[in-house]
Length: 68
Ligand SMILES: [Zn+2]
Image (cartoon, rainbow, N blue to C red; front, side, top):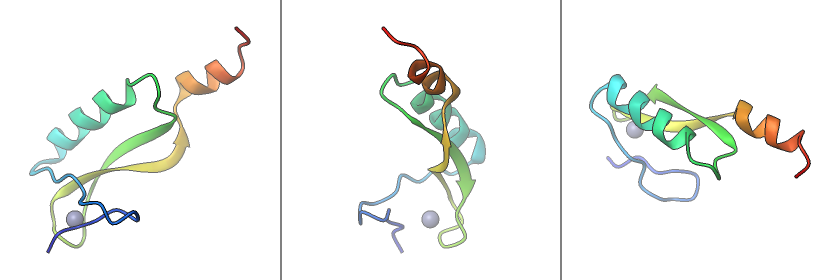
């Protein structure tokens, strides 16, 4: 069974939590990224996915507080 996002796109699967964390950290470094991504274990496929936990990245909080 393929896990999908709320937009019906297939979710990226990782075999280990470490892999997912490494990817989440990379994605969190993207300049356009606003929400923090976290790695989590899926209860459907028992693999690991990356998802937003709804929190803003701190770097973006700083951006919003700064006028350029
Ligand atoms: Zn899954």
